[in-house]
Length: 255
Image 1: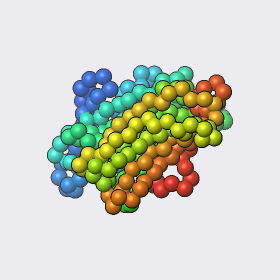
Image 2: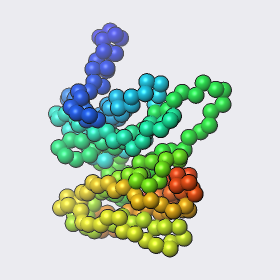
Image 3: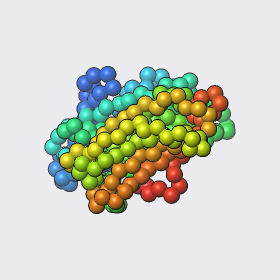
């Protein structure tokens, strides 16, 4: 096979079919291995995100991807793109890769205007996604996850928090709470029980936040009924914008 043929074959594997606004489908590779190749899923997810960025002068700035379930090679993959924010210089996107109604991969990405100057300021991570689990299997990790779809400079009120679990204890309780500065008040944003398979996928928009340091805490249970907890710290300015988002330093994470 010639080099041009190889390039054409690779590009074909990244092709997406638009289904609706911010919804695309892509084909999976065929043959061995039986699980979908993670690199192809991540590449297609980035392609889907880029096709929703209407400003032609914005390029990929950063991305963070996490494999939540194994993909099936014989089925197409649906990519659902969410647009948390389009600012003056940044566009933020969240992409879910779905098969048979289940999210197998999640990506947060940002696109920015290219800075032509000689000095570049580093940009903080625009979302935080961590997984607490009892496993180091990166392709299908039983555990809980928490993702804040915002970043420094964004308006805090109304930002979206994605949370969920995969293959944890069936019918086990979970809770999403918001703790105000200095722990003065604790608000339960969501609660419930996982499915019989130990799954839950949900999102919640945050209310207006007062200036100071807030904590978003998501709790659940591992397959062995061990308590799991994830915490994200969100610092809000007096103007109501996000100063920083960071995880609890002691919490377990998936690298």
